Length: 379
Image 1 (cartoon, rainbow, N blue to C red):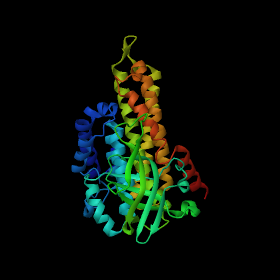
Image 2 (tube, rainbow, N blue to C red):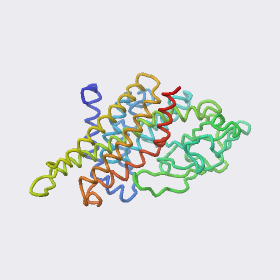
Image 3 (cartoon, rainbow, N blue to C red):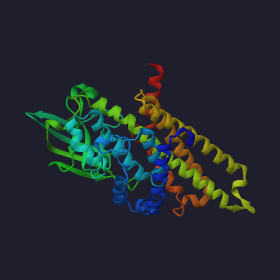
Image 4 (cartoon, rainbow, N blue to C red):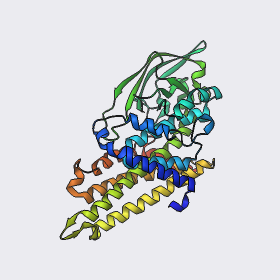
């Protein structure tokens, strides 16, 4: 599928692949096993411009397109899905809403330090009783004079522990449900902001997933992102782009499972021949490759539509749905091809399986993706 890429995109893909092989791959398993955030890798990613690939150079971005961003997240996730989602959540969920909905002052204040990787961003929408249902948000933002006072607790914030700034959703008019939530830019060092529970997860263990606690947090009027009660719209637009990041992460996991299984099948001997000669193994590899290519094309299509400023909401949902389910399929078949070894930590196959599952859950479950696709089809 290289023929679908520009020369500049191919060069970026090759550069990121080299970086991932040399810097990420050697430490990925150890970092994951020890729940260690890859601080040095993220710093180097910032130095390479990978924390702001699809943002204008005037704000410190790399000035490239979203297809390039897709390629970079896939290449990184091929070796470490945790690092892939750290960069994806930072770029798609924190930087992008500030760029798209922020005032010029907000952009100049935050984007240069975020796009360089100096400051990590996190997005915080979900709560204990508000996941897919954003209108159930209980965190409140009350206007008092020229200040906003925020109280509540948010859950599932990727990068929550390391973030220097949160893009956070709070209810400004509880009676209006989804039409009564607003978005705020919350510096992590604001008095009253603290990191609560850190989730112990099945996979992507090198990235933090944190509770964000807000106790009488006082913010200036300038902390409001977009307009009052526009938070649901901002969230949905943000998640459309975020789903492309997760689709790309899922592609990386699927490709890792496919490539490792292919290599193993050619090395593993049974009955005096490599197991790759058995039709049962060949058919599993064929199915893995076919599903991976199809998911890649769906993600490329949606990314291309975003670059062309077209409505790509349904296409992003299709890409995320198919890529995440493909990641699970390939990871499962990868373990099957590895046999008993695939169930041990001696091979990466088990890590791919654990990492793949979350791609079907965050930034909209598979059920929500099907809902988005169906509504687009039926409207």
